[in-house]
Image (cartoon, rainbow, N blue to C red; front, side, top):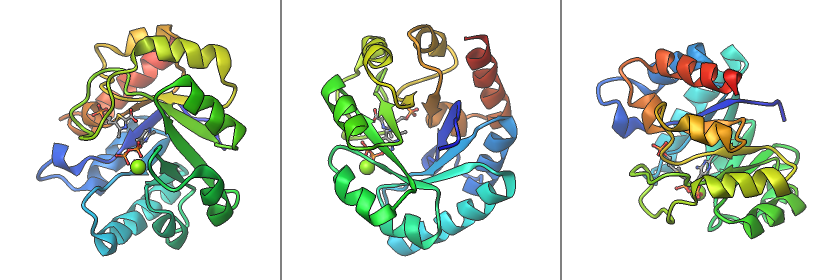
Length: 206
Ligand SMILES: Cc1ncc(COP(=O)(O)OP(=O)(O)O)c(N)n1
Ligand SMILES: Cc1nc(C(=O)O)sc1CCOP(=O)(O)O
Ligand SMILES: [Mg+2]
């Protein structure tokens, strides 16, 4: 997969009155290089329409597009890949369904990370680093200690996620993360482009 630094996930509850496409276009202009559609409403027809719109936007800008949870929707809209959690379709089964599309796997412990790597994940999510209110059924924070463990033991790309804000991202980067994912800090901002640019500056400083 194309390498990336800043990964934004949709979260429409954080920007009432602004469209998802408008917010995500601003994020792309700020430097985001992966967008994930995450919609927990369960309404597949609506999610498919949103996926089509995001596919068009991401294609226009050459940005990677990932669909959360729904392999069938990812295939229907020709997304670049799918993100799956520990309770979603198992990775080996998903690989048979998506061929060489990107598969990202959420991990919360080193054993999960090593298994995802061994089974052919393209990248892993490492989190939640800090408490987050964005995901309801979330596990306890894994802290930056887990980032350090992944840096030492895992070779595939990983992205740190969960409660990451401009005010705490430096610690995550210092622990060895070179790719950051955020929802509320990006899409909930009045200055989406400015927040993304600030994240990128911090990632560039290392
Ligand atoms: C990049 C990234 N990392 C982790 C997650 C969480 O996925 P999952 O554990 O399946 O939880 P839901 O997002 O489906 O609630 C993610 N979506 N993206
Ligand atoms: C969707 C998701 N997955 C997580 C994980 O740790 O697997 S944390 C999370 C929510 C991240 O949102 P915010 O940046 O607003 O805290
Ligand atoms: Mg999931």
